[in-house]
Image (tube, rainbow, N blue to C red; front, top):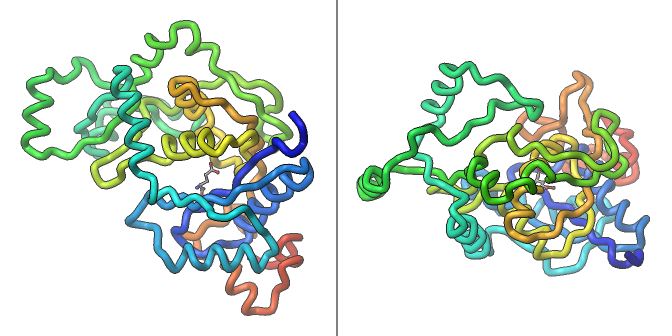
Length: 292
Ligand code: GLU
């Protein structure tokens, strides 16, 4: 690969104002592209229409430009492409790899408790399609009654479909966080279980949209936070099922606050705009020389 073929992306979700952790993540992605003589695209991951807000999106553009980042325009906005994700979901459904799950979150939690399901290395309790599966008649009745459901990926069906290929799923981790092993890693989709691909109020999930777009945008390297490391174990499966190329991954460490907690919009970590208003300069924020 020549240096200029290197393509990564920075893909924030406009669910709040960016904080120092985002600035660090952006510096990782844009910096990696610069070092490789490649390109870093910018993507707005705004599929969650209940949490994303236009003012946050506007602020992301302003903050990133103020920090000194630039990218090829136009940026892709996921909310403008729900049809693409629906087509990907249809393909998986046509292959017999998805199912409608009518269980509420509460009911799923109850079943996981009852079955004493342990937390997997991905930090969650994986859910798998319950047996016996719903009959076509019962399913039709529930749909006719307007019962909400989620489309889930059936790992059992994926296993049948891929045969030995399921155990052979792997990805390359390049220069990772010290907690994550470097080199070629076997993917363990079963750590995440039958993930949701779409819901009634959300026509696509993060997993499907991100894999779709990384393929569409010919991303060769994904540079993102270590909090998304386990998601990669499902992403490799989706890429393989859909015939999409698997990029090389680099999961970088996260910026922690004084209490050693990950910075988060929900934890009121100081926003870049507040730091700017308080007189911080871009180079201070990018060098981590600010209290967050
Ligand atoms: N949109 C995701 C986030 O804001 C990042 C997705 C990714 O880099 O794969 O956490």
